[in-house]
Length: 292
Image 1 (cartoon, rainbow, N blue to C red):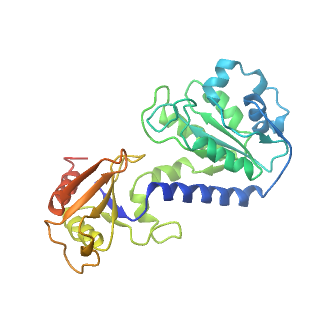
Image 2: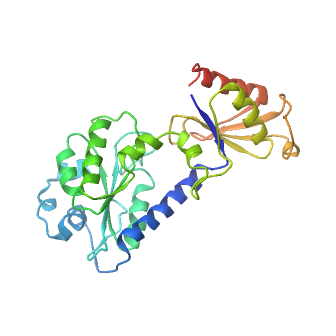
Image 3: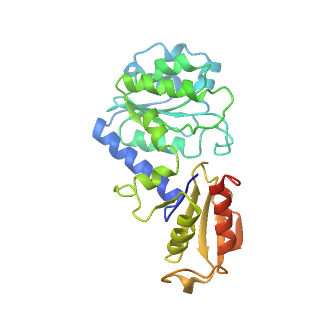
């Protein structure tokens, strides 16, 4: 069991991830411009065989809906793209839009990549569409995976990861590769990369009650902290912790255990007031395996 704390916030992390993605893509594909065209079949063709494939046009409407969902808001694709990217998602979860079923930021991510001169198309993974997805994505230059290791109807995570493995073996730029996802698919990764330019040097990982009580208390005394369980996603198991008495910030040594802490859960922005002692006890329960 692990808990970690850092100053990082979800929105900032998402912005950084998009900037990093754009940087990685520019290394792979450079820049391009050209005329544009619309439609899921045409967009699919932009990925598959530079627009000359009949495969995408032969997908019937139900199959297109299964694979692409609603592409409302997707910008037209470049006619002569520098490269092509697919973004994998999965239906389900509370992070999807009411209309398109895509994550709220997936279409904007696609559009940002399109504006940089690449073709980009979101794809819904399902076991039913596995072979079609392999055929479409294998013609791309890279993929971005946005499927969390959760339970989705009609989705086997091992089969999905096998698809990504196969695409990676074909030479696609893997963002990320499933083996990398397995190594860094937890909040522990934040501590592992703390010494990199993309990390936060003041990230700490607590694996027992002693290190949590001493380390988290000392860190909270220096400013607001983001406390994360070593599981969960999209705000689940993540709390933003602030001292109510801001004059305590900068305290050297231990904070008083009766210090009041405002604890906001990132999942729904709900706020609780707890003493530092109560907050630490919640962490102890998780570390003992009773609350996590």
